[in-house]
Structure formats: C-alpha cells, structure tokens
Image (cartoon, rainbow, N blue to C red):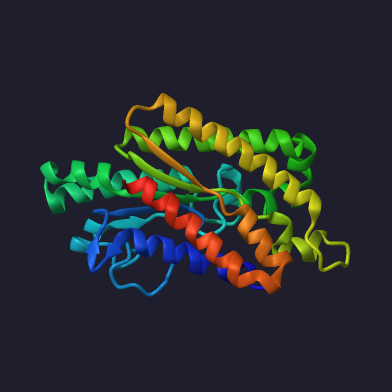
Length: 264
C-alpha cells in the first residue's frame, strides 16, 4: 500500500508549483506547521527546517519549516513523542520574525509575512498515536468530543497566526485514517481492509474543520483560509488501486486548484 508516499509526492508537487513558476516565485515565502509531512524533499530553494543549520541568513527570506513529526493539535500528543507542539512551533515562528527583521529590515518584513503562504497539516497523530491507544483519553472523550477539542485548538492556532500577520493559510483535512497501514495493523482485526469506524470519524472531523474554517474566514478581515480536501482522493487510491493514476491526478488537480485560490 503506497498511501503515505503518494500523499507526500502530491503535496510536495502542490507546494513546489505554488512557490516556483518559470523559475520565479509566486509567493515571497512559505511557512509550514504541524506534522512534518513535507520535510527533506530535495529542492534547494525549499524553506529550511527552522532548527536546522541551514536556517540562517538569506535562507530565511523564503520562509521556514516549523513542522515536527508526530505533533498535533492536541498539546499532549507532542509531549508523548518528545516533539514540538503547535504552541512551540508558534514560539519559533515569533523568533523567526525577529530574525527576519534583522536580515531584511522592518520595512520589507511586513510584505514577506502577509504575502507568504502558510501550510498546516495536523491531526492524524492526535488520533492514531494518542487518542485511540490512550485508555485515559479514550475514556474521557468520545471521538466526537475529542474532535471538538482538536478543532478548538485549530481555531486558536489560526487566530494566533493571523495576529502575527498571516493572511494566506492552507490546511489539509485528515486523510482516511482507517486506511493507514498502522491503523489497519492495530485496529483491522486481522484484515487488510480499511477500518470503517476510523474513516467515519475522520470524515466527521473534516466536516467540522471545513465549517470552522468558513467561520474564521468570515470573522477575520482579509484572511484567505483554504481547506485542502485530501480525504476522498486518497481513499480512492487505496480502495481502487487499478484507478490509482486517475485518483492521483484528481488529487493533484484539486490541490493545485485550491492553491491557486489561496495565492490569487
């Protein structure tokens, strides 16, 4: 099953096309938060990981990658895996802004921050690496209640980014969680089929994500908040492998179309 690799390839393609067209950047900078689904893809002009040695000087002019593997909307998820929570990623972003002023000058920083794009991919780790395997958490919240907690965290994060100058933000939905190899291994009851219950809960979360994003865009002036819906196309990739080429194209087209609406 090539679910994860297909998603990363398409997401990377989307990010690359957004940032470079005919050798020219379409946006001044890119900032990545959440889980590190697009780390280390080999583009020399791709925003460096903020904590890497490359994140200094002029390299920071094109943005930075603040994402951290196994982080999530739920703060405890990051603590469990000794990774960077969204709140810590936001702290690093504030530090980045101060560094950027020293590099580019205060007069130039405003346009880099407001015209740059912000990509967020998070939530899968909260469910698969925390909620579903954490007895205390599972007993404290129903899946619906836990998704509400995550959505509240998401809304707060978007509003905090907005306060710091972000105006063009893209966020991915959850993938079909029940089709991830780890989910099938742990919850699949010796079956190779997708776990329907987990997929149903991912769809419920995604519906809330869309509704909350629409409210935030209405609430916050000049904010472009685009939801990249990856669920259905990725589900088709897994459940209809014979049609994988068509499903991949649909996913790529959808991501690119959403990306254009984000930067236009």
